[in-house]
Length: 155
Picture 1 (cartoon, helix red, strand yellow):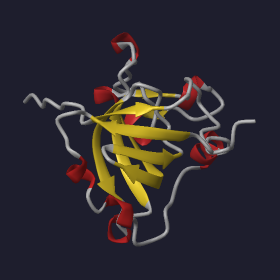
Picture 2 (cartoon, rainbow, N blue to C red):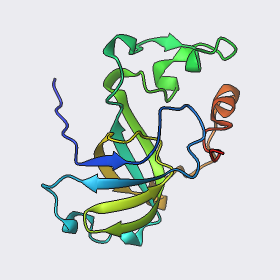
Picture 3 (cartoon, rainbow, N blue to C red):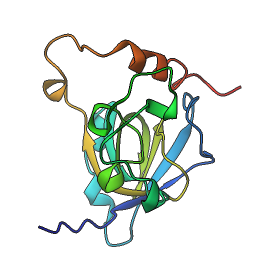
Picture 4 (cartoon, one colour):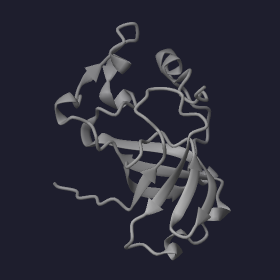
């Protein structure tokens, strides 16, 4: 089975490739010309959006299909690629929930999108409380360590 996805928008920001400190990063998401401003009609009624994007700069030779140490750190346990959120994964898809700062025409302004300038956006979805977990979230200790400085503001 083949699935073909085409970008709907492009990320614009001054972000550089980093593992941590995405806090405070502001980006714009510019819809491609085939979409008019009406594609975003009503989006400003939501505080948060889920952005699905492509890790388009991943070298295919680095993709992991089994297990590895997160961030290649042997101090963390070896876990399956689907038990972590790294970019070097089959299909190279990323997903992040961002704060919506504004919408003008075909452009969204968002906070804390962990995607590089020029990243293709595959979908934009409003975050609705009913789609969030209905019970407490459980996660491993190593993942808390990985994420400790992820949303820290860059100094």
